[in-house]
Length: 227
Ligand code: C5P
Image (cartoon, rainbow, N blue to C red):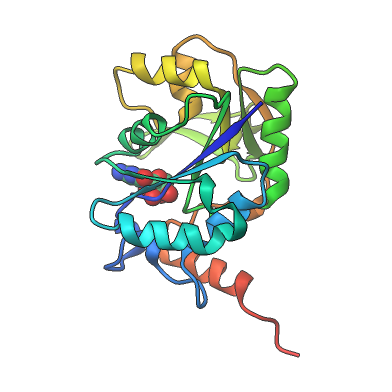
């Protein structure tokens, strides 16, 4: 089945504290978006849709074409919206008609290893309507009410969701068309439409660059090791 990867890169990056939209912040000589696209192009994708901030579509296209090598025909660009959900929706509109599996990936998870893409695609090829990478929760989690601890939550029942999140294309299209509230990820949109979503193993390297500390960590991971 043909796979499209929608890379949402239209966030402002307010929590990062910089002036450039987050996807265009540099890790080394290259941007967060460029690093994310390297992982995407290592996956067996038939189409890569980059959802750019309004006004930065040309820069996103340049990044994508320079990463694509001889697969430049795969690249599409869409303009993002004011929420992640709107940006995904814009990306979905640009997916080609013959695509059967759609992965939605945060550009901010710039160092996601290709194996994570392969696990997600593999789960859908094996019959799942949707599949997302997850990691076990390390911290002890409490339910709180203001300053009061209300309950301990059994962390064995919890997992932290990452991206790429993959879905059968028909399922994702229908779920987004029906979504009438704000969800924090694509799996929640699909679950709200009544479809089961499977978990596959995530990877610590698929962490989301959100805060300045995350940015420093990512920069350390891509920096060349001194001899
Ligand atoms: O803000 P946050 O880090 O949760 O965003 C996750 C991903 O969604 C990022 O890659 C960001 O660029 C993208 N996004 C988007 N459009 C928005 C908000 C976020 O494409 N309006």
